[in-house]
Image (cartoon, rainbow, N blue to C red; front, side):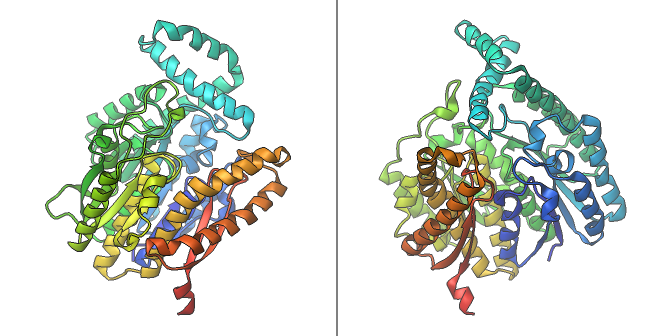
Length: 508
């Protein structure tokens, strides 16, 4: 089995727990740093403790998958402030060269986030600044490129005056430093210290300061002829999973092929909310980064990309209403093709990226009465990039484990159930209920930051609701009953931690 060390982006389940939950499908364990070294919520992780851990485990690893944001700034939220100076960030990165000297055979797969176009939200005031900075950064980029419409000049000046100088200064100083760290990471690839690098574009817009940064980075990558080792596409939390899949492909010396189909057809060219390139380009880049070939004649995997019909338009794309439900005919065609590929031994992956922040309810209602066990993987959480990387890694590692005789059927089934409980039952049903309760009880805090009493109360409610939903609905997806453990990992309602155990497994 591959010996893998994994330094996550932070301590949220999607970054810390998903790698281990997926790797166990292939009966493989992933080594993680001590939890206290990763920080928690608004408290950044501790790079010095991360480095101590790396020096201890590196001699015994085949692969190290590492978040540069955690190593340099203490995680994703830490990356959005200039608290860590550029020189200090560069100094933290020198540990990677040391690891190569300690263990020359280790392969280092790293990822780093290209900063979003706004700030972190942790209360109602920062939620206001989040919206304003989204607009301001887009308009400012247009002004710098001399493409700003005359009608928007007054809005730009108004936002510049309304947003506190301290908020703007924090944002732009962090952007500048992070861009230089991304450039330095490319140099580490050139020096063969980092073997593969993903630069992932966090929440963005087709226009903004990130586009100029991307242009400069891509020019450097092209000149150095590193397009086969450095990938740049939308995402953040899932990139470690892309690299986990790549490590498995490398270890087993496999380069599986995936065939892609978009539902509806125009979804391939659409740009999803919070992203800046067409969906088709994003899926292809993530597939290549994960170790796959695209549309080969010997396809092992078939990806059904259930996406938006139109590109998000306008300054406030995040406020765009969701697309109208797709026709029953398109859904029937999607499932018919899924069943057909499964019968032919080509493993189906279902990418549910039609709407952000959770599964598409129309699709999940349609899937009731269908045999979900035909799917190699499913995901539908947060941004399109998050969903794509999660479903890819799950499907790839399932395929390799099945082929290699290391498949844990219980682990496969349990992660599939966790995705439905998290991505659909919580994000599209239970979270709305929690939001309504918070609005009725303002003394609890806000949906962005709960007080301890409310956090405990809502944890109990989340556990009850998701266990009840599992009891009532899993059989409709041809999935077995499970014991659910569910809670809010941070004192907010944006994400949930869900792990299940098959009741059949408990009886073994």
